[in-house]
Length: 264
Image 1 (cartoon, rainbow, N blue to C red):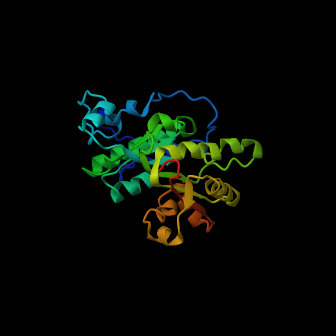
Image 2 (cartoon, helix red, strand yellow):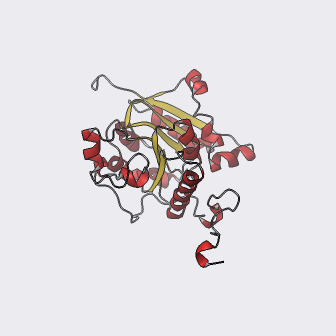
Image 3 (cartoon, one colour):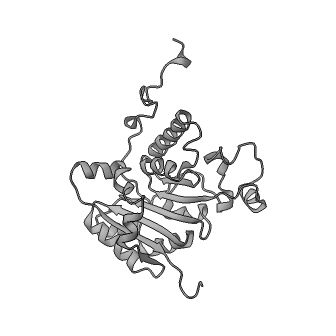
């Protein structure tokens, strides 16, 4: 067998998907440390052709900003999974909302590489599907405004984030009053922010931050029951599945972006 025809040991022979054991990394990274990766100067500099070639052909030489403003392409990313882990939520949402562009934002390089390979494998095995999801390695606590315009997103997900137990490290938490200002900026009015954790103290923290912010209001129980995404918060993610297997509790906080009188 030639070297080119040898099976890739990183890929599962039966599923043709990447094996996680080759992409393992630390459970969490320090979001305050400086990492080196390219960051778009503004949202108009995000190269959609790299992420969604089905919708934005690579031979399209005009910029995303020019394409959108001229009407050539009107699609923009609407869902953002912050700290997407191994991409379970993205994969499940891809077929549930096939015309919606989504992106996972992950700080760990090996995990990002896994998600990228997983998406490419799924696209290859399922022609025409999974073209609407992608992943980018970045620090969402620093660069959210570089990727998304005001009111661009309709949904944001924060599933099982690092709890940063020590009080001195609470500033590293991905849900905080000052970061909610940025999330509110990128969410459209009516957009929804989903959070879930298996750490009760963190769940109370995230809920308190959202409850105390003037641009968010809690989603009612009736709405939660009718939302097909809510059940995926546990079932679609590796962390959620682990909690379920161990019979653990989860703590959700799902809130809607609202307008205030000054914005109306």
